[in-house]
Length: 116
Image 1 (tube, rainbow, N blue to C red):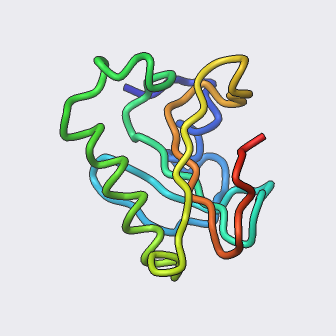
Image 2 (cartoon, helix red, strand yellow):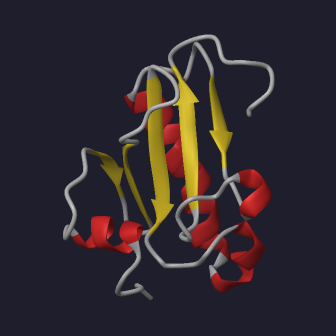
């Protein structure tokens, strides 16, 4: 399920260090090294798939686990009440930088109305 040279697969395997926030059977969450806001976490699927366009490569449980983990991370980082944004970029126009399905959990401050 894991790709040998994928950055996020290496992070999940512990080959590259990360600041872990949360982990369960299907997901791994850690702090983004280039935060775009006061709170910026990444939630990644443990099973490697490129992006949401390839959602059929994940089971419904695995896909749902990603969103549940986003909500859990928001609670752990104390932004569940104040509000947060969940973003998943897919492809060139969305500026996807790592080809492994992941969700940004962003908050801790008032966010711009447009993400760009």
